[in-house]
Image (cartoon, rainbow, N blue to C red; front, side, top):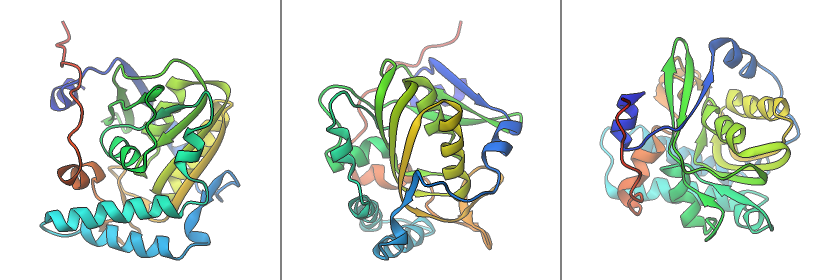
Length: 252
């Protein structure tokens, strides 16, 4: 954990653990419930943009032009969602969370981040004993009754599950906006929200792929081929720099 804190120059004041048994239950096969709304079902343009994203993610060398094309494809997918994040975020009393880096970059480009009640926490997943540990820094809202989360993609879903656990009350209304999700990640978010007694709607551009052993989204028939790669690494060189984070603090 300390190595992750040093790498990102921050301090994880919250830790949320997902053990292997819980992940197995959350990721179990099943049909997507009605609160998972997939734009590509009705909008073929989403799959075209996803093909661009996957092609760039698998390039051996990415130029700035490739990165810009990748970023624009993600923004296009957000524009094709039936419900727009800006509309949901403008509802009175809504807290907005857009995790660093890709969540913040995309939310800012979409004009979602409000002047108040907007948070951009670091939320980093770390492998622990076959499961995952999510470290979250101090930039979090108080317990919210209405929450909008903007993030780039959903693989395992654990970082967004941690966001929900740490930021909302039972009975809260939560909307998540993302470009892509694996089937396992979408199911996990829906199931975890039910455990938290949260009314969740997941707005997602496209659902495809599978989780590999490191919980990354890959092509099921070609596990060496990633679907999206590291979104933050790909778009951050052609996007505004991250704001200064809190100083890393050594654990005495």
